[in-house]
Image 1 (cartoon, one colour):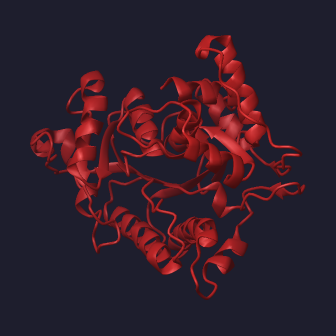
Image 2 (cartoon, one colour; image 1 turned 90 degrees about the horizontal axis):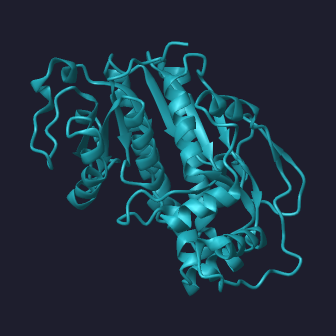
Length: 363
């Protein structure tokens, strides 16, 4: 099947320095696409160039500074053919193919501060989505748009309860909880994050329905991402948690043992490949791709990390106290479409939890 956009095309990846964004960029480069990534500061631009330039060449990867994605017109210039990379100081209009503009957009950037104040998070995330969609709609070169949503847009982590999640499931409960009157205490931060992702994805679908842009839209909904960390400069989000746990960080142990609810994991490479499927597969159009590999809890994590340690990944001394009667994630998720798409990219299905954890701790 012919790709929806041809190899060599330019693809915009917002938040390219992040854990998911960097993996998406790597997969695109490996598949023969050029990548323009947005970052908020020059330090992030530097380490992203260091990550990709040597392997793929200086013209394969570009960066654009977008300090505030909520500012009017934040992504207008990033969509166009001409751009000057502040790190490389190269005008990419010099070559004819570079003047075409972006053929695809991966909107990954979001607010990950976990601020419990909904007014500090949700309007900014919604503005970022609207700015990216509007800029893409103004550029006829854009053929595909993929939004990095979240499992939290479908459901909050709910333990010891059997229920089913599919592409029609929405997390309206956390939207209501996020907008409840103050005080905005710390226990509300996850609801605010979930509401920001739910409302942002709903805005994408509204835009497609009412504005009717020329491009095709898909969303990817990943749960807890674990796997390779591409740069030591990256905090690496949830992947970084498991590396810190392996290294003996006490604060991370408390987070994962006492605060982080059982839910599903996904290998970050699988998340990136599902983004590629949303961008490149011609028959994937107007879909929510459910990136939930399987359920896990702290005891599962401890079991596998100790196994990795005993099998030669460490010195064999690592031990973690288990949680008695540990709660479990009992939901089922319709992932048939996501698994079928992963097989198109040479995967047998979702990557297992042990491999994912091993990749994270060995990064």
